[in-house]
Length: 329
Image 1: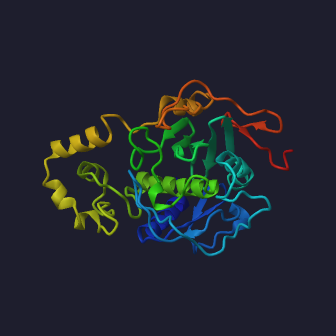
Image 2: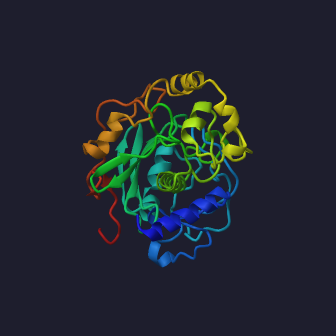
Image 3: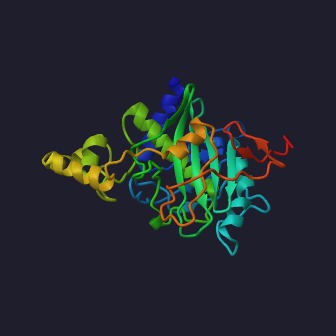
């Protein structure tokens, strides 16, 4: 990474650690709220500043609930509202134009039971890589959206995780749906913004050695093996730094017992890794798998996915199809 990108990452981490949420600009560029980023260079802002915290079921505490202040990106006529009387299918498909405007390097696959999105996010200006989010979006209200993240490197793709990913399929764990951070039928741009900041935290962990900001880490073994002693503990919403909170008590536990509790109970002795059918979308240029009609777990898939009509679309560099911009039409 370039020194300027590392310095920017450090500053963003400091703000997140102090519970100040950054802004996300078009193409997934994350910047400080007071950084004075030139929107004419990196694109319009795609999300508001967030206030409050929401808990991640298997991952981290995020400042995601509540949106305050006017957005610098005006709503276009016909932009899909996140709620209303329309079906989820109509709602999500109606948002695709806005998604491609905010994240131009995006693709979609359409299936009767749901839709897949492939979204590339820059994360930081001048970063030596980008992130790709593969997002499975069911059209049924009771089935949650499931997403996986990969770093795009020169020699291929690398799964992002396993820290702060879900058991047992390695999907992104960026917020807790029960706390209203994002609900089915909500803004897809806001959802992708959440993933973008989650990837930024993962980058901070990789490059600077710590997870910036509040987080959830309920298992003793998880805290002992994953947390830096200067990170926020994650045992509760009002936790202190790990070395001031649970670390001494965790060190005094029976390591074998707590390891079995986490690896066997939570992970079910399986690695937090994306399913092969998801990985093959990128590595094997395979079509995304469809959604199983009767399966309660949206991470379980079968067969091959139906592709949308090729009329009015062009082939994407990530092997999907994207709606062309007016300049390409």
